[in-house]
Amino acid sequence: MPGDDNDGVPLSPAVARYDHVLLDLDGCVWVGDDALDGAADAVAALREAGKGVAFFTNDVRHAPDHFVTKLWRLGFQASLDEVVTAGAALQFMLAERTDGGAAFVIGSQALVDHVADAGLRIVNNTEFATRADVVVVGVHDAFDYRELRIATQAVLRGAELMGATRDRTFPMPDGPWPGSGAVLAAVEAATGRRAERTVGKPEPDMYAAARDRLGEGRYLAVGDRLDTDVAGARLAGIDGALVLTGVTGRAEASAADPRPSHVADSLAALVLR
Ligand SMILES: [Mg+2]
Image (cartoon, rainbow, N blue to C red):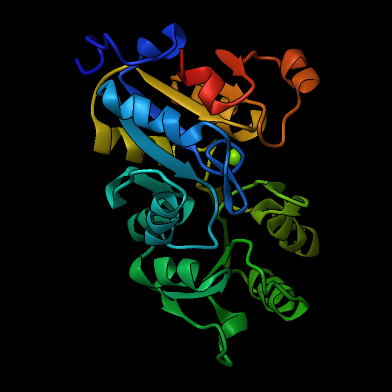
């Protein structure tokens, strides 16, 4: 297996025993536009030790290639097939379970593209928007009341409601920003309906995609959130490490039930010896 012979590579004993490491991006690898201290060294050390690496994000504001470009810009090596996004998982799920149909999408152009690539007809900006068969919800910077109104009317007319993630917030340099879960909650509150499906962490979809790409072995998932990264790892049957560089503080980490497999100040502190 990869990683059995890592003499000379400065990996911590906690991480050395895994074959593959799934790395959350926001709050674990970077915050906003800044790489977290030591994160690039940590990822380089994982690669040097022969570990499989995947970058995991519930951020549906951008397409996978955006994250590859950003990783390189911030000093990380990365390839497109190492990036696993909730948007790509949503596309896969929609392609499996729907037979075409019309979709109204609250979300970025990247999310709209994923829904279109799943074979659905996008009815945003048409007179048929409130008659969509499926309403797909993710956060984007231009979210507005009109979108909420159309989504509400479509769902009350019988459209299926699908959410990208239930993340309430995501970490940014000036504090938490509302996430896809906040926008989804607005649609749920207005309609009295709960979304049929979400696909981001902690749901199993992204973990299955990673297993598909990286193969067999012992997996560790690393992230900054208890309710997505640690809970998701547990649901997927793998170990979950919590880093304190994002939304979760030391006190909250100590009180967590179930406990994360590992708690570290940062990705660098977790990975490097
Ligand atoms: Mg995160």
